Amino acid sequence: MKTARFVSVLAIAVCISLLLTAANTLNPSPIARGYSQMTYDSNSGKVVLYGGQIGAWQAPNSLSYDTWLFDPITKVWVEKSPPTSPGGSGGGDMTFNSKADRSILSVYADDFSAMQTWAYNANADEWTRLQDWPGDIMVGQRIVYDSESDRIIMFGGFTLTDYSFVDETWVYDYNTDTWTNMQTKVHPTGRNYVGMVYDSKVDRVVVWGDWNKNYNPSLDSSVWTYDYNTNTWQEIKQKKNGPAVRDYQSLAYDAKADKIIMYGGYDYGNDETWVYDLGTNTWQKMQTAQNPGALSRYSMVYAKSANKTVLFGGQVGPAYYNYMGETWLYNLKRNTWTNALLGD
Image (tube, rainbow, N blue to C red; front, side, top):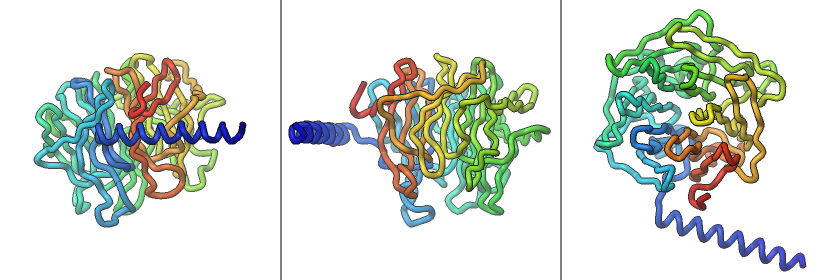
């Protein structure tokens, strides 16, 4: 009986491997990477992916400068060929400005000379460089689009000049191509590679996560919200039974359910799925039959056209630069993670 069961399990594993190989052959996808920038283009219904780290930090050929579009309904990736591409490639962030119909990217220059701002037009397959952010070179900053105010909000980051955490709130106006330091009186402490989304129902930017080399429980586990109209941050203390605070995780705002999705995180990776309700300030840990694995440094966005959260890439476990290249879809209603190549 044991032998028969082993043979059955082996046969299933072989079949899955063959299916994945065949799917990759028919539908190419981005190679394995971490620290990539990804957003959802709500006008075209496609997920936009740019760049990322594919090898050891600052090693030759360690960055990828490619641009991809993913259709969350057909589950097909298509590599684009823009005539010009941004520099930096990894460690920045990207968000979609629906009124301008552009994906906005914040990333450092290849020569570390500037913090560049770029706009991607998916219809024309064209990158355009905009006004540089005037601050120090940094990574781990987070940007989101506030649709009510038609502004890009940026918070946090880690400077590569004096190795300090940034606690400033900046706003970018695409119409005037200008950056403004909002100089908020109260704000979260400096941090990088944490989760930040825009909750369109309540018109608030939502930030969660913090960093410390020892992951001390006294770290900031609060949810912070930012209101551009009043230029104020509000701290919302975490109730009991919420997730342990961490970094290297992403948040995705499920607009249909009005819930925020969080996955994985920590320097060494994690496979937890949590859902946060801002209205009730409650977290719920979701027990799923399968998931993308113990990940950090991945990219994740909510795709309204498919009503699913899309996750790509990331570092697998504690081994640095051990990246994966799989695409996973999370269905909140069903509470299921599905490998995009294997279908629903």
